[in-house]
Length: 477
Length: 95
Image 1 (cartoon, rainbow over the protein chains, first blue to last red):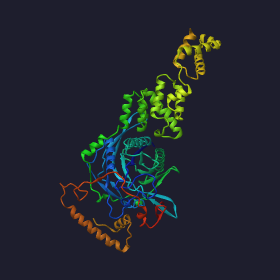
Image 2: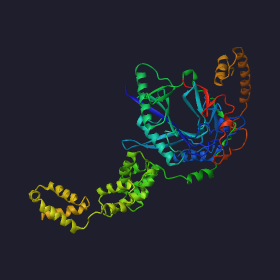
Image 3: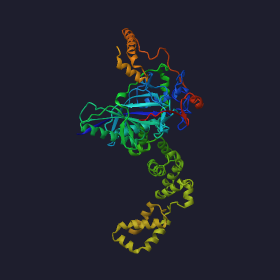
Image 4: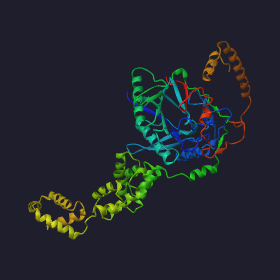
């Protein structure tokens, strides 16, 4: 039987605020345990939550970016459950009236087509703390620093029909929230966490199959593996005559498997109700307008602009706009008055490759955009050949100065003086009478041999165009 | 909407309340009476009334995003039954 996969995602993004969503405690990552959990986060008696303005604006930014309906009035609700990393016994979330309503995001598929994925909603809520299960004399250790960190939970429609589509959508949401500056996107630190709902159905069937929810996915690679495992598990189960149980399953990266997290009798029953400690959130037009004015250029817009303003290929434009950092870097390089296509290739191939090799990110690049621009200018004005430029790049990477300094110090300046090149060529022709004869007899492949000789004698510094022209003239003449 | 014995057991479990078996039926009756009152309220005609999520006709105030809290771990943890290396210790939670 052919099975179709149906996937919907719930993505938790930690909003990049300085303080918690309902308290003035810091959200900085990596602090000593429990030094950033104040009495509001801890749920001491008598405390009251007060909503963080920036968290609201960040949610609005996301809503605007995905063309969503923004709720002029939204309500916080309590989601009740017991777990040691949830000191209040409830999580403040939004249930019936979320701040961001229906929107959508288009993803690019491998065959070049686009697909629009529906976004059901995005709501504000607080994060829980962390349980550490290392052995504390048979006890668990609880760190509540993360408690109360603002989250925007982005819920998609079950619109994805393959694991690839789901990963593409998740990556695109990741790219978007980082572009918007509302999330640092750091998956290792848990700033961007994916829960996936997956079910299968025979191709052609309209009704959805029973879904399972996979939690604990904190990398795109694991996401693909977890979904693959779960899809196969469901197929085996159904083809073996069994039934998929609606349940939450945890992905274990070490064992590359998913396993059931909660047993049936503990079925989720969160008893949501409006939080009496918080009034409804009203979004004034003015607030929404100022958020709209503060919107940065979004990835898709940037990509289209790169294609038209710089005449880049769709592939180059897509590559360059993967991250805002890279796009900005590219524009700085181009700002040096160099050819955009050349700049695109240097940024996405040479520089990206060099960074990748040593595990650095763009902001830590030893070669700045200005210096890379300076190098490309020297290629454009024929001071150096493209081949030697790589050598100059390496020297710049190793901190040997800017392009002009390296070219000077290493004597890499291209020989464009025709007279000088002619002298060298005359000597080579005189030294290799046999090859000249063969060439003149029709073995034109030998041109490469002569070019090689010239380059060897000039350490690659001769202008290749000129070398070719002069050589052909002399050999044929 | 009367509650039966097992409803009360379930609610008590969700609230992590230990109820004496002998009390459960009495609770079921009390809670059912409360729900009966709610049913009376539901009989009122609310056709043109906008639902409220809060009794006050006010909107939520927002605060600036700034860190205003100091570290008070020791004070906060003074009431905890068990603490080690700055962590609260609780009975093991993983299965």
